[in-house]
Structures are given as structure tokens and as C-alpha cells.
Image 1 (cartoon, rainbow, N blue to C red):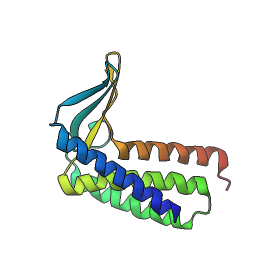
Image 2: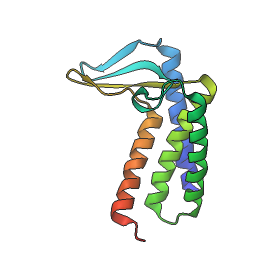
Image 3: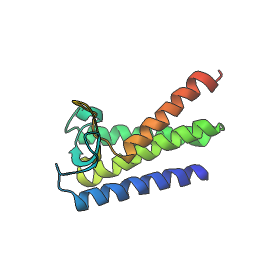
Image 4: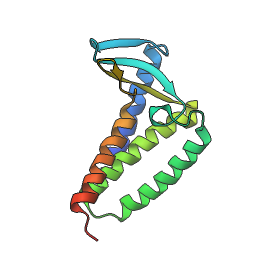
Length: 147
């Protein structure tokens, strides 16, 4: 039951923050939080990470739906708490971005970090959830999982 709560909180947080960005910043506008390092920068992405496969909305929706079914199955079957946490985070992030793709045809991104002249790809709360969940999943697979 806690896993459903985690998923719900992350999806709601993701959608609320994206809504706030969309309502308060035009696309391409930004708010500097830490000068020359971190800003809230409103952009949209019709692709995947680093804007790869731009414009493949239907493909991403299908892949995400399949992934969510598989993750939900594994979440239900798993007994390990760390694995359930990892899967919950991945699932929540996938759903957060899926909502954007279905509703708007693109994903709202807004967290921008600059490291000198390098600008890290702009991302959102759902992306963070997927990355953290994936890191936990890798940790689980390498250090905990036994055949």
C-alpha cells in the first residue's frame, strides 16, 4: 500500500510543479535560482532524454504503457522493499511524463543546471524519479539480488 502512496505523491508533485511552470513562465523564459549554475527554465520536449527521437509521441506512449504494465506486475510480485521502492519511483516518473505526452503531446521540462560552458539537459520531477529509481534498481541488481 505504501508503494501506491509513493507513486501518487510523486505523480501529483510532478504534475503540480509542471502546472506552476506552465502557468508562470513562457516557453524559453527562465528564473535564475543560483547565478550561472541553476535556473528554472521552461521548455518542452517531444523526444526522450536529451531530446532524442523527437516527435515520436505515439511510440513513447506505447513503450511507456508496456513498461508500466511490466513494472506494475513486478511491483505486485516482488517481496523486497528496496526493489519495490525502485520500481515505484520508475513507475511514478513514467506515469508523470506519460500524462504530459497524452495531454499535451510533449513533456514539460524546467530544471536547468549549467556547469561552466556545459548545460546539462533540462529535466523535471518525473525524470528525477526515474533516474533515482533506476539507480536503486541497479544497486539492487548488483549487490542484493541473488538467483
